[in-house]
Image (cartoon, rainbow, N blue to C red; front, side):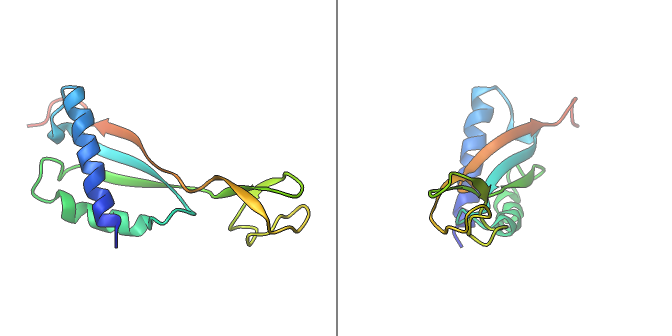
Length: 120
């Protein structure tokens, strides 16, 4: 399960962004990541690893939100862009199997939200 390593990398990058912006890690309320459905990352495993990786750290109150990006491809034969998995990997327009990935393999930190007001 490489998701634990990914979670540690997310923490590292969030820490760098917090430092660049003069924020304490305790100010981080939520981290939103985008995961392509055709990537090798399992969203459920990311969510399961997050509490274990943040427990006892300054980020333990931060929530991890995972948004799944739909895998879309372009048919090499007719140029149609379609949802790869929904269409069982086959072009709905011409029936061809040959395609090029357009979206769905990404992994991005989309947003880092902070708590509003002062916490005590």
